[in-house]
Length: 135
Image (cartoon, rainbow, N blue to C red; front, side, top):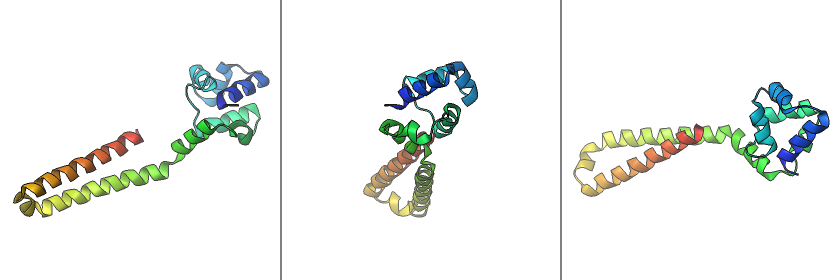
């Protein structure tokens, strides 16, 4: 059974309305509806609140729903996300320093200019990509 059906079933068995659950979890009623219809997934804090509210275990609520487990893994993997962002910033700073230090050498060769531009564009695009992922 998918998470949406489990949430709807647990809410129904508890005799609660979407409005009541939304207030208890501090989200909108539409958000509860979206979760129950699997248009979106709750975050881990909301899953814990729902588990407490419906008086069911997290294991019972989450077990067997690979999409939801994947969503939670992705949304809670902040350490790796931060590490990639910090690495991208550090690489860009390093390239900027190298470009400034070797500016005279690079300016003498069109191949080095083209290579420097390519490296700069790629590293900057990687940095922007990591920033967008954080948003």
